[in-house]
Amino acid sequence: MSKNNISFILHKPQLSENIGACARAIKNFNFRKLILINPKPIFPNDKIFATSVGAKNIINQSKVYENIEKVLKDIDIVIATSARFRNKNIKHINLEDLKKIDFKKKVGFLFGSEASGLSNEEVSYANYTLQIPTNPEFKSLNLSHSLIIIAQVVSSIIKMRTKPFQKSKKVKSASKKEIQSMINLCLSNLENINFFKPKEKKPVMLQNLRNIFYKMELSGKETRILSSVFASLGKKR
Image (cartoon, rainbow, N blue to C red):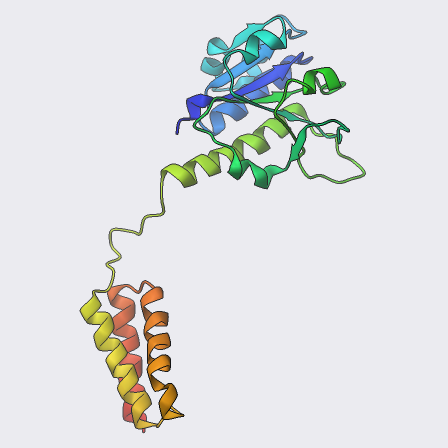
């Protein structure tokens, strides 16, 4: 899975500042592809470069097209962003639904112009429409703000899929022997206080206790601490 598969498409952007801010947002989350369709300002220009701050490479590598059809030839899934619900035969998704998208395919996020957003005709090219949850009484989001929200969510999804959680190298998992020794100490103390009642339920209770301890994925240090606790509780009697 590669971030090179993700494109951010600005349809008829009107302000140089927003184009630059979008480039910056794309680079913030290590994406690379910015596409513009019929931008109103001359592209590129000094104001775009200025507002992109350290993302000049995104501007320099971006592509400009005259219409949407030429862009979509190289994209498998188009997700159109919209603050309005469209009464069209198209699937509407939210940010959480992005987890179901196959980012191994080429995915393009389509953003409308600052003044009017996307028309129904432009939305008709999309596989999905995506609405960012906002105040129902004030749904309008700045173009670059919309983009950075989506970029952050997609980046997190891709990172989660490609880089599984890893424990610190300083944390060593407890061995089966350590855990079993701790469990035996716990069970011995429970036996001494006649915890396992009625007797016919003892086997199931033992299974459940073992399941609890093994599911905890204890470290060696945590296992030793618990062993000390159980030993101390035994001495208190």
